[in-house]
Length: 215
Image (tube, rainbow, N blue to C red; front, side, top):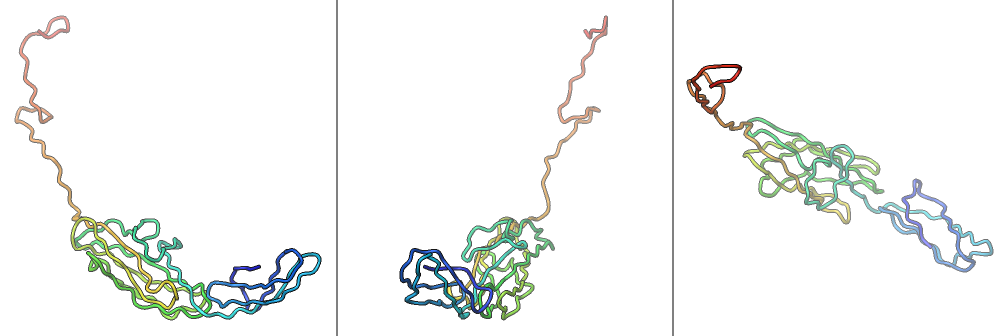
C-alpha cells in the first residue's frame, strides 16, 4: 500500500481501502524522505489509516519559457511555444530578449548557478539578467537571454546552468534563432522607350477601321 503526493504539512494522515490483513505501508513524495510503518493490522471493514511525517531532503527544479510552458532538461528541439526559439533578428542592431523562469517545487532551498551558452553560435546568445540564488521551496526566479545575431541564417547554441537538484544537474536545453540582413533583392523590369506599360513591347498595327473591325 503506497501513496505518492507531496504533503502540504509536515504530518498527514493517509488511508486506503484494502482487504483485512496485516500490511506494511509507506508514503513517498518528490523532495522528501520516505515514511513507513510495519505490522499495520486491518480488521473487518478494510479501512487502513496511518499518519506519516515526511522530512524535506532535496530541491526539485522546473524551468519554463514564454510564461508557463515547461522546458524539459536536455531538450534539443528549440520551439517558439516555450521561447527557446528566438525567431528572427536583424544582424545590424536587431535583438530579441526572452525571459525564463526557474521554480523550486521541492522541500529545501534550490541553488542556481549563472547560465552560460556553448555551441556553434554561443556568442549570439547572451545572458543579460542573471537568476537569484538560492530559491526557497515554492519560490521562483527569472533570467533573461538576449539574441543578437552576428550573421544571417540559422544560429544555434546550448544554454546550461548548475543547480543542486539531485537528478537535473546541470540543467541544459538548446536555443536557436535566425539572423537576417533586413534587405531583399527584387527583379528589375526595363521598360522600352515606346510609351508601353510593360516589359514586353507590343508591335504597332497599321490599317483602317471599318464596321468596328480593324483591318
